[in-house]
Image 1: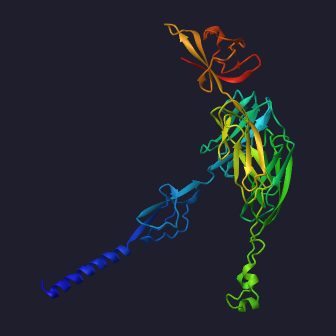
Image 2: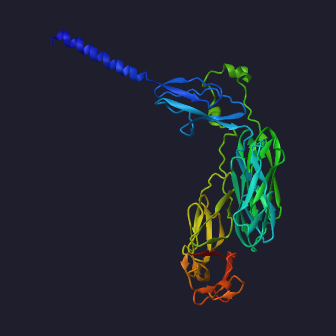
Image 3: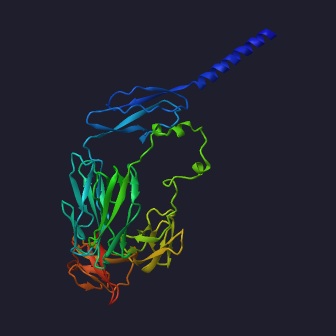
Length: 467
């Protein structure tokens, strides 16, 4: 091949390479908007690694637009496009239930005590606000069709409310006990101002710190100015003053805090003075450059107190109890804490406050501020053994029950150290040979008592019947 031909071939190859490169660089992808029956949204062409320009929201009669979704997740319009994609519109039927909540999620009552749970179905204009109430153990806590609960005997049960539309649910754990420490005071910690559209978190400090029922309800004196949810989160709606009230469910103790909602005022660019309009760019004085406004000055709020919240003061062996540290004031800068157990052979505690029962007895769990180790609080937790009685049916060749084999378990391990068990007729028996006649067993009975020794009686022991 002569020199002229070689040069021609080289030029052609170079030209082909440049075309391939330019074609790759100018690659475009198609973004399709599937409106699912809504108004039409035109497809877009997006260059490789470009971003989708968010279109105007589509409309659909009797529906509210929830957003554009891709692969089941809300699409981020800052994502670079690397292939053809289809974005799908999500809709919510207007008037359709979107959630449900109870005014409290934990409650402690004495036997025969009652309480009216308050349910809120969202949105406020939902078409079907019907709900169903259930109790995980109606022998311990019962609940009526309108949310009134009644404590029947010692133990714990979960009350669940479920919406008829959508099946949304919320729960309240109810503990029934005789050992109740009553509330005698409540105060509110937190900021006193919030801007329109912003939120602040208030916290209720219930005393004494070992009160059995620390649950509270929150209320705003004017929801047009500020709202408050069941967790004490206040949201500014419009400028003005409003009173937030917290009420304890035990004793109806109250505390109030006045909140000022501030409009987020911005100085219009047209309001500058003549001197400001003629001042050269960058000619601010040193004091103007370095002195932050009062509202911009960071607050170094110190921790003054730690409160421990617990649903109960006991935990079973091999089970968990979550403790929550509440830092006061609520806007303290350093919210970090450490947890300690006084006896790890009784119970351990994780860095997140989860207590795990190891063996029966009492243990002190302490929470300590990382900011100031002298600020701490403690709670005494009783670790309880878990007992269970199992009756195994003994049948003859005609499948008739002739008796029962009796087994007692402590912490899921077979145990023979008991003195006596309450039988189906309310009498205590040893069952020395490990069996019980039919007349001493009542299969309608699912709780019993065990005498560990002459002085110790274990109540509310679960009973089961198997073949």
